[in-house]
Amino acid sequence: MKTHISGITALVLSLAAAAGCQQKEWTYENQMFISGSRVTNTILKSSVQTAEMQVVAAVAKPVESTVHVAFVADASLVDTYNLAYYDNAVVLPEENYTIASNSASIDAGMTESMPVHIEFTGLDKLSLDRAYVLPVTIASADMPVLSSASTSYFVFRGGSIINVVADMEKSNYISFNSFETGAASTVPFRTITDFTMEAMINVREFVPGIQSVMGMEGNLLIRISDNGLEPNQLQVVTPAGNVPTTDVGADVCALTPGEWTHVAVTGNSATNEVIIYFNGTEAYRRTMPSSWGTIDLVSPKNSDRGNQYFHIGYSYASGRELDGMICECRIWNTVRTREQIAASQYEVDPKSEGLIGYWKFDEGQGSTITDYTENGNNGQANDSDLLWVPVSIPAIGE
Image (cartoon, rainbow, N blue to C red; front, top):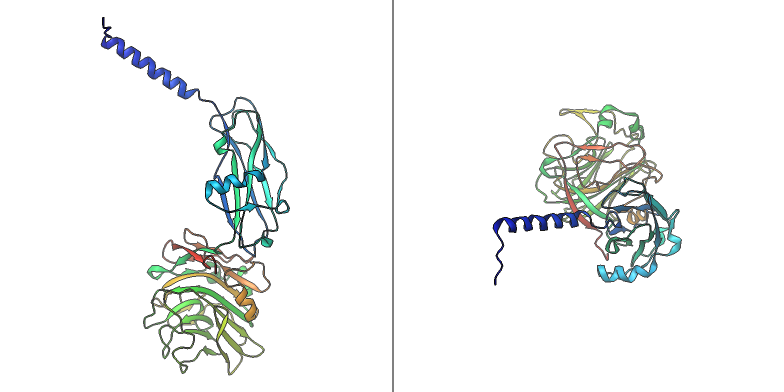
């Protein structure tokens, strides 16, 4: 004999089953885990010696009473990391990290603990040819732990130093309110005698006409081309004259389109000598016929196009903007040697002696360009947010 269930009975049973599922879903076991990314990658750089990171314990639902947790660095989990992430890392040596206090707690009614801080030191001494990993895991807790999210891996490896740059598309360029208002932060730029100017540039194409890299029209300016020069020839403008002059050959200080070039210019006030370097190698030098005296990059310089100020990617008038990507712009009030320039093309310590302006162009978003020196002369894109481009400089393995 078959049993038939009426529509009403079926509906009641269905609702009861649904209610049971909802009850079961709501009463799942609250488990502890480490909040945030499972893997934190850091690129090793010779200029970076230390770093500070943290781990935070978390739960899905607020705890009813305070629960305690302890973390530990566990070298035995290196193999687990390598298998999971297809890496070949070795454990970070004990002398390169310190966990001041490995315990934390999640207070009643809360879902996260206070962070446990990890201090990393001696990073500049690590080999750039291998990867290091420090697994930090939950060693004990007053409640169940979600095993799949109980460990954070802090990874350090050699790689590209520059990972993002700005593209000066659509005739964009960088202005500086502090220079235009004569702020106190610009004092080091008012009395320059010896100088070094640097920038990494990648120009899309060279067409007749001037492209500006960095500086101030008529005082001190790195630009590309001039009347009598080829469209791809770099030139430096100083109060004592231009370098190179227009009577040089077409191959002197010639740039290649679509290719990254580190450009550096030095001026020695004792010898009146100006030297241009490409990628750490001397490209041209000239002894000027007279001294350039003191260079002022702050006081506005009047021209038939109005007052001229210091800019990156612009000079004199519209139509002379840089058509390409740029990063690592620096100004020094010292003469850097060829060896110093060659050794620090991709970055320098912002606290270096004589460094008065340092714009890395590594923000990756927005329109503000940070000055990494203590002077703090930040720049602003003229039109709108800049186009930010991911790069790999130098390419891994170079």
